[in-house]
Image (cartoon, rainbow over all chains, first blue to last red):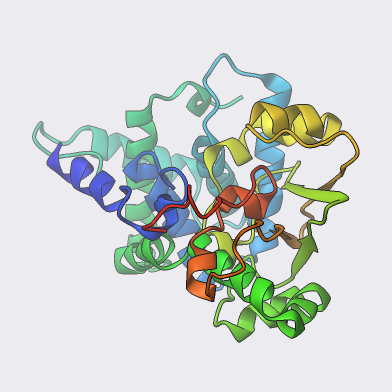
Length: 115
Length: 205
């Protein structure tokens, strides 16, 4: 997927935050999820502490249940954001499932992972 | 647990795309805003900001005093601030005390001066172990401290974000502020490393 490679180049060692460390995002969906959370907060959709509380709860839930999956910080972040938006009545799980289903049903050749 | 716990990376990508498109349709956030946020955090902010703060403190005693008294205000003097930087407390390393920062509950981190946290900072192992056995964790990360040095672990709360002011390395008396900033590593400002010496410093930093 050329788009994905391009995004990783942007997140490569030439950009300042990585110079002193490692990649900030390991996949495009992580940066999109981070970006939409911050943008929603900037729009006044929620207070940052509201999101933080959801993230803490989601991380604690994962650590308690220890699903047999590899730890993914941004997977927890993604679930926390969905939880908060559903709680606020802004985006329900059912409509998200439906949209995801629609996107998955696109004809081959449509790239799922934008950028 | 939800089915998403077992999702593949592609599933996460699809889910993120679905959420983004729904939010766009609802007029809650536009893709260009997301682009701008990501660009900002990938390109504009990062540990080089904190390095400038540390280098200024090393060369300007009055600034250092202000920095330790009111980190947020002193950091704003250099033009840095914003989300996750509303209340930054700077803790100073000395010959007797070494500070290290963690967020045990999630991943709070002073974005304006350090950018986004590295993955190990967010890992369950670091978050739980560095509080219980900081000396062992630091040693595993390559920082062995003398037994007489006290280690203080600072757990980020919902308001406070911590920045470690590392000790200025010996042998850097002749260096200017910009050269000193190049010695300041991200890890030294979290407290899991020391500044690079002049010989080892990254010339591009």
